Image 1 (cartoon, rainbow, N blue to C red):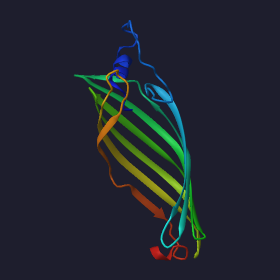
Image 2: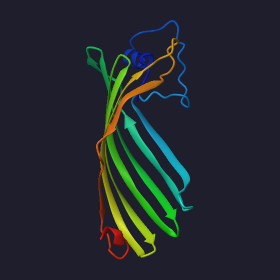
Image 3: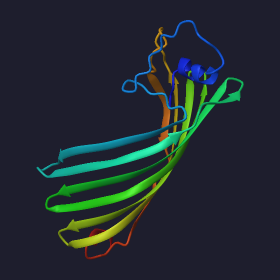
Image 4: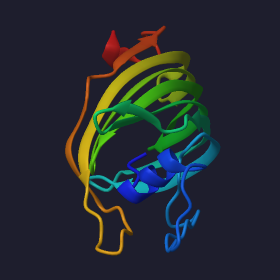
Length: 194
């Protein structure tokens, strides 16, 4: 949601002013205007990591997120804000040396972004739960994972002379440690946790 200044200005002034020249092209593939929208974003990743002394870990993750973003609000004194909510399904599978683990679950979240000039600050909250199944040398066990998170991203949009962009510089991007609760852990399936 780090929108360029000219896009934010056009959103604030829509239906108020007519412009003689409009040379801003909105390409959904190159950039997007997240103003009062509903969106869908599927994802997937496939990786295989070789570890020493020759062990290999395979990881497949997939899911889909959907959500909605508010219109741009004028807060006064040059400050603007946008808000959004999202929900999603996520799943993954890891395999290593004849062992495997599956996780499937969901995530809910909310975020808000404030803008002043080319500066932006986004605060995101999320919570979710996954159900998992582990098949390892010592047996099989079902488990649940609960997670919450808070992240903040503060940055500055450096725009090109023609107003295109925005390449953004992130000054702060931190997250509080996630609360992760894994239960129940059977001693027979996971003896190293006992």
